[in-house]
Amino acid sequence: MYMIKRLLPVFMLFFALACKNINNKSEVIKDSSNQISAAAYQQEIKGKKVDLFLLTNKNKMSVYITNYGGRIVSVNVPNNSGSFTDVVLGYDSLKHYYERKENYFGALIGRYGNRIAKGTFQIEGKSFQLAINNSPNALHGGPTGFHNQVWDAKKIDNQTLELNYISKDMEEGYPGTLTVKVLYRLTDDNSIEISYQANTDKKTIVNLTNHSYFNLNGAGSGTINNHLLAINADKFTPVDSTLIPTGILADVAGTAFDFRKPKAIGDSVNSSSEQIKNGKGYDHNFEINRKSSAGMELAATVYSANTGIKLEVFTQEPGIQFYGGNFLDSTLLGKSDLHYSFRTAFCLETQHFPNAPNQSSFASTVLDPGKTYETKTIYKFSVQ
Figure 1 (tube, helix red, strand yellow):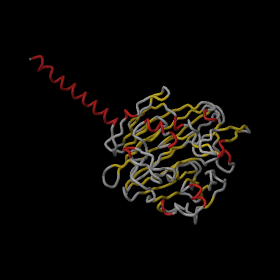
Figure 2 (figure 1 turned 135 degrees about the vertical axis):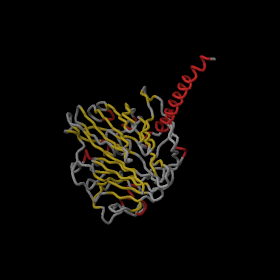
Figure 3 (figure 1 turned 90 degrees about the vertical axis):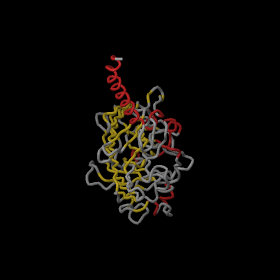
Figure 4 (figure 1 turned 180 degrees about the vertical axis):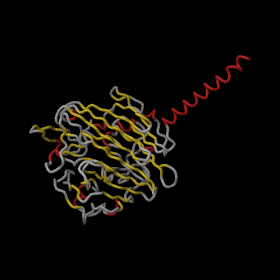
């Protein structure tokens, strides 16, 4: 009995530490905002381990990211009621992402974000053919683009995740072995910073972006047409019926594409404009008004009166694609079995222009050996 009394404090200390470790583990796996389980992501795809990573900041904002496609799964931001709103579309499990590859929810896009006409381009007179996965064009790097690859992941700290991927020469038809690093960082001012870096051993084309679908009222909560949107752009790139830019830059003034002052997304989305008809709504690239060629610039601002959440997008890129969820339909069941219906999300994809390899007037997307591709985009959230 004497020995039991002597050892009891040791046992109690060991038990307390064990419980603390269990609790810490559950905090990593579960978040009070939407109860996403890491176990639903801890599988293997083609022999590579997939996982779910949680980033948190001092404001208790949380971001979930999986290394399958570098996808942002969930973004829980403070709202005007003192609680949190998950503002991005996604799924509860890796299985759904894997089975529904072409939704691009939250994914890293490469090698080339957006469309390339007829899937062809030339470098120094040599032609390259890509897969036609958005007939008659190539879209978002092809069927096995970066969104469907397992990235090597390293969590730097509670607020930073590093992802790495090596795209082999001629993968999806692109020349050169491309070594890519992407850093996701959640800052204490409630910003998600995405830093992209790439190097190649042969001339190639590169245009990386993130394809998160946002609804500031909450994922699956209904239309985004009541969101107020402002885009810092005097010009946009009109498209043909296959959504390939015509090559000209058109003034937004007097058109449905004038978002220089905030207005509801739904104000002109059903206008008789030929461009609206071509995109089945908004699915267009805007040329960002820039003070310098390479600095960070405010590209767009979105606000929801329902939640008080404001999103600001800053980037070093020359363009931004505004997509209004025109191809979503109610057959898609997302997190918590919520329906992702027509125009219930928007995307703001920072980028070089679509089909730039075939338009000499657009900024070049060619990356040379010995050069480093570097760009950054910031999605900053606040409450008003």
